[in-house]
View 1 (cartoon, rainbow, N blue to C red):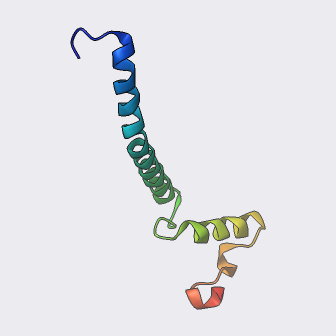
View 2: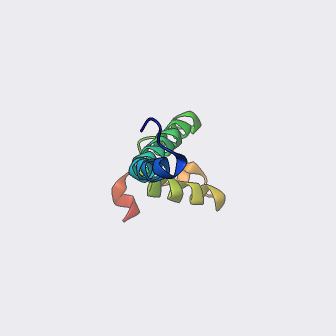
Length: 78
């Protein structure tokens, strides 16, 4: 593209951006999920729990249920 003017370069640049955008979006999602996992590791023992279970435990805390009253195994949740 040497010697090509701005009008000639624009479509190539636009195509490159369109090509890379979905990969960047996926990578950002992966990094956000990894950051959330690291935060859960720092905050306590919920790192291995799915997001839904963490949300339920968080809600129990908000409702002032003490952790000693939480079920200790999966069967108690059903």
